[in-house]
Image (cartoon, rainbow, N blue to C red; front, top):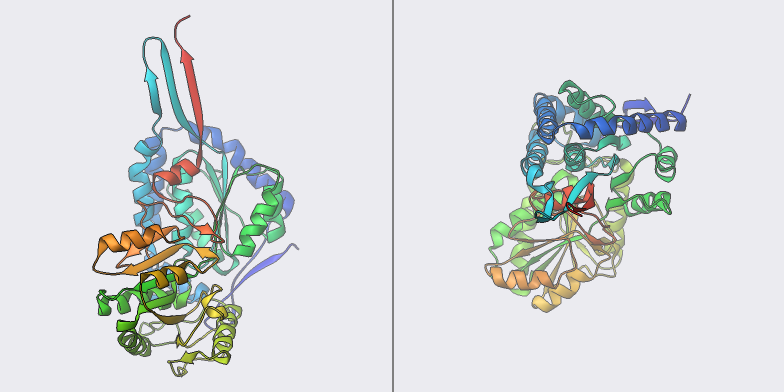
Length: 459
């Protein structure tokens, strides 16, 4: 028997799903089938590929109630939030809508003497290594445009959300996408690395930890296989003196706590102008105290358990370290906090960048809040991080916010919103957050390679 991959439900610590991982030989064979299927898939008309992806998305939409329940079991998100189909459909539909233009040739010259143009060609076999925190939406970011562009796809989903990969495969196959064109593979880490290092795939998209991204790049070293990574984050929010305080509190605290803080672009540190600091903290504490921590299958629950005990342990360790160094906690322990996966959401003040909670990714329901004197101090603190995914500015002055944004080391700058992925814009990061370009026109460019034609028509 090979390696068994298990999903341990955060609800009660039981084994929810377990599957046997493919052997290295079987994994290589699966990738080989994807490679063999790719030319005929790419030869299909673009409109046909788009239609099949749209049909698969609609197929997923037929089971949204089931999706919410299964996600609660797998990673703890409360059923009251209804799964992920809204964002899933929005992203896939946008990429389908723009595909014709995004993949169109760039014609430099079409004259009686010459045809000079640049076309986009699919890479071949795209491997998507998807995370558990938004398992449908993060996967579709690459699966949809990769298939539309003419690639075949092998999906390796996180152990915590094994069932999601299966559901996606079921939907795509039911919609008419051939089985070898989209495959869901259960793989262990070593086999995943072997597929990459052995050039069984042609492009890798990885969303996950910094350590995981480094492992992907090590596996691809010397192969020249492109590796796109979206890794850790420590996303800041900045509340200027002219901000709408109520709106800033509502959005930034939701951005810090929703999904038990397990969001790639969640808010993990907040800087508030001196004049608003006390009011911000007071309102933030009242909001968090209104949450109900509990079983995610209970419709009354607003914040569920973290996806795994070890993730909660990281957050508790950061809070303990911060308190030992002088931080102040503002939320009393919730009754449902069991010292394991069920964790009281926490707000910290009197924090500094000497504390791990303000430096390293928490990926949990905790946020540190610091007062700042002015824009310059806020910019310096926001940039004082090894990560760079998003930054959220709160102000009535759009020009000032844009000027601040140009000084920030980040992939996306928000004004008066946070924790949102706009499929029309490039999803990207810098520093230890990784590199790559997801969604938007640039997402299609990342999933294809340019091919130039310089045709002299007459001798």
